[in-house]
Length: 387
Image 1 (cartoon, rainbow, N blue to C red):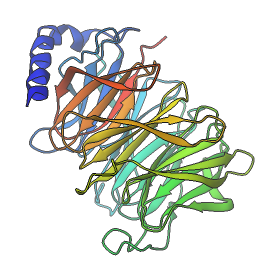
Image 2 (image 1 turned 90 degrees about the vertical axis):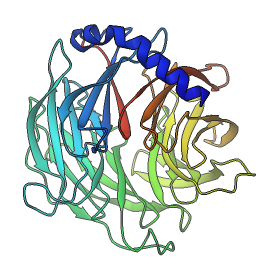
Image 3 (image 1 turned 45 degrees about the horizontal axis):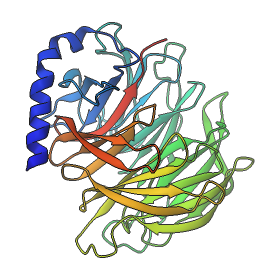
């Protein structure tokens, strides 16, 4: 309860600055943070806050775009454009989800809709953009498919290519009777695009053709996690030689070595994200790597914690380094600010975001008491000030 009282006080103290924060542009010390949400009684779409990198304070969130279940967000690498999934099963009268492109309005940070396209499958839950800003990729959880689409010069969405349908199943009869694409991201060199599929326990690799945004299966076409693990998300190490796959169903992280020449992955190790004496139900959600490459963080929903690991940069092995309560229930998302000095934990079921200071020496997290209240937060996206 104490943490919630501190959180409430932080929001009250920040309220005096709401009017200013809503109209001031982002600055180097106060970058913008956009929040994707599940919509309902407490949320109507995408929200904007400003983050003070000196104190860790967040301003009260402002609704900047009304949308249905804009759960995950991505930023164009060169333009002030944000993309959002519409995590729904019907879009424009068709059996598909949607993708939206928004221009960030200078001065206010509000989002102006550029255009929308179908996602190529139901229940899209993740999207990403290649490093040149030429293509967008989406993972459709409901239908177990992925899709890609070219991006136009102004950042708007081009016509999507035909979706790629995953096939198969795995051992968990409640969650793995069919494919469920959950995450998609280009590799650091934009040569291959990798996709986690929770339903079939695979990380699939596709060769990326920037000319037309097309994807074709790589050789080899995939790597497996342990049966029943449920590959959910992954993050690359800054050296590009390793990726860390967080497995939702068995609460583990699988480290893979990565070969940029052909997109091949080989499992190096597997570690648990929960304390050995924890017996309750829990599942993993997000994994992030510190910009230094020294630490990895993973969120546990149920144990409601961030698991902290140190990284052997030569082998990719993860060594347990502790746990930190997220200050709420069901941490659907965690993210680091660009400096790596702060971590934000978005707690979906308690409708709050908590801020933690990162110890650069050992990766430990310190609860600041700062944060905000927001309905069903699913994703937090830092947008630095435009240079």
